[in-house]
Image 1: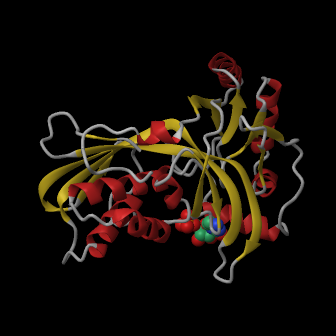
Image 2: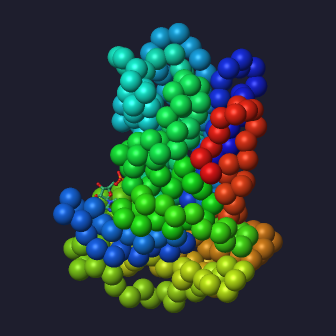
Length: 309
Ligand code: C5P
């Protein structure tokens, strides 16, 4: 994420919260608490929300540009604020900051929008409140907020193990144009994992997996073991993958628990042409790119404090 001073605000903080896709997602087991063990390669995207935090008198307040997003204790940004406040030993409810989310990452899409916002809030509020929690404690709080949140403190390309919350930074994958296709329904994360269990675990996909290679020749197979379970209930998922491959995508898969599907293209022109073709066929699309760790964390302002890389 990117930290900067919002224009016109003396001591505020602005943060970019980048979306992710799961380039690959394998389910390797189940934990006694019902969580699933994952082996997943996360990849940051240029697509991002913008969060602004400004000092104010009174209790912590939150608003969001997108209708339907809860702006109270149910929001992960609110939970992040409370967690930073409490972890720093502050008394009572968090106060003195007003947060605004300019939302561009679609909700319930498998792009990690809520988790990205939460991680951005952790970093920004730790800086703004001067709580100095540091990388390790922020990582612990992130894992308590949600399995995806720790990745967003790392960004770029990263391996996620455990619940997806044990993060190992990887070298950045080579640049790709990414076409996102949004089917007209959302899938909740618990629902997707429940369907996966009901279907008896990983099933072979009808879509052949392609590999994306790092410059050293090692690669990652683009596939998602939750896709068959979600695709069985929503035929559109595999259909969109097929159409993306027909339009020249080197690989296509569902991200996270869905419902968003992505196609990877070697250059922006090919991505834009494919997005135009799918839009003409009636799909809602968006073109973005892989974002490197450096792009996610390039920062302005806030000298001396910073993101966790
Ligand atoms: O941690 P998070 O709130 O994102 O997870 C939401 C739900 O998704 C969990 O309660 C669980 O049902 C499911 N989940 C899972 N295994 C994971 C991540 C999430 O079963 N690794």
